[in-house]
Image 1 (tube, rainbow over the protein chains, first blue to last red):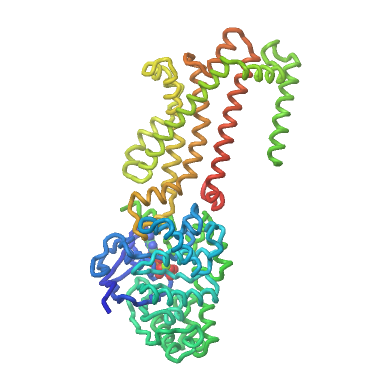
Image 2 (tube, rainbow over the protein chains, first blue to last red):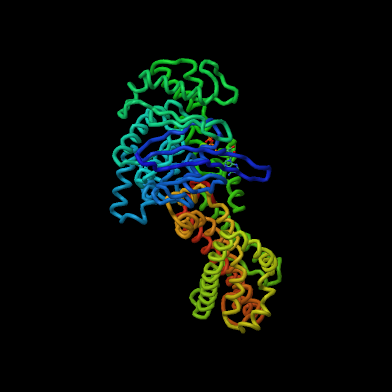
Length: 335
Length: 255
Ligand SMILES: Nc1ncnc2c1ncn2[C@@H]1O[C@H](COP(=O)(O)OP(=O)(O)OP(=O)(O)O)[C@@H](O)[C@H]1O
Ligand SMILES: [Mg+2]
């Protein structure tokens, strides 16, 4: 398999009034064409920064990213990103349909665009919402619109930043399986960031585990599960359970059973440490991780804070990620 | 609905007070004509050819001035809003020019443009440029960087990002600026007509009615027409804004 994406010695350092922050500290890994690679890492370790660097939105301060062998300098043309902050990545003045058509404008004519968007919305189960506006949808629905838009674009490389963080468990399973189908159908290469250990193992061909901030690659694990995966049987298989325990151990840098961890963050890693077998604990870990994660739990909670309003932005800032609108603007103004 | 009713109640009350005061004889006869007389004159005036021409002259000058102000201030605001270096350079000049009242520029404008309608149009443009300019600059600052990144990630360059993301998201703020400017421009047009005479219009009608014949009933009727025009302009723009930017009101982004 040819290598599609090569990340070598990638480093990024944010500069702000109150000093410097090293977000990425010399990351290296590859993604082969057609692969689905998952990235897991502790909260705030620099996962979003990594995706921004790969997509050419920000310039790395050291190292480089190569896509199809060419050094990324500016945004490559056949790449799409599903951002973590999905509610702020939908255009509020465009209907759902037009949001999905947005990136297709230069490549397709009107009828094709419409058809492409219709199809993608149907795939994510939002066929009925095409005429609505983003602010009329719940957080989970908004997130699915963002996913539909990326799917409709049919990029060679799809970057996804916690794309299923605020949908309910059932929708999440459906979307995970949709992603696996789409990827096979269109031969898309996918790099997906997630908080959820189970999700990383379920979806990935490989899992890249990152360290606490500043992010380094702790280990890259091959997921040797059969290509055809199933939400029930795959998750209860021995290989799956072993893998996710391994990921959890790597994430916390200590042997299993020694939970809780010292970083004070409710994480997906704790659940497998408590109960090691069976679907019940696996589902439990999913729920625990999404409920505990800072990026929103149920659809309801998400929709409350997902309004792209001042409140929404404030909420984002309050999440303590330091990448709210204000701080990023400061970063931009300096360039 | 309820708001309309309350508004009407206020208006009727105001007219009633005007009527009573006008008839009470507090002011010397002829100084404060009662509301009913003013309203009658107003209706008569609207059927008078020369007055209608004055009205048209004012509205036309206002519309031209607002159009020019938009054509100047929006592009300038976009430019200053997207290029911070330029904004810092322009700031001192803007801060110097902005506080100058446009009526203080009347002598200068008459020297340059003569006594015709160009003078009042120029001065109205001068006054109307600022709200639009400032709102546009501010709006460009408020464009959500996440939206810009989203567009960029789909391969949009600088220009498409400006036209397809920055402009639409700035539009509600710009529209608010235009609405403020519309009122300002009308005030300036009528004031200049009044102070500089010359080119016809509501302002000159008021001037002539008061200084020549001392007809306060006509003066008040003329003022009332100016007020009504201002009200209609503002209400019309407000309505258009609400229609066009439902999403903005719904997302709480602007005005
Ligand atoms: N524009 C910025 N300016 C300064 N610091 C920033 C900026 N964006 C992010 N950071 C900092 O860089 C670190 C990594 O942020 P990043 O968003 O990449 O983490 P993350 O792993 O995606 O977090 P999460 O799991 O919460 O999504 C954080 O400490 C954050 O505060
Ligand atoms: Mg992130």
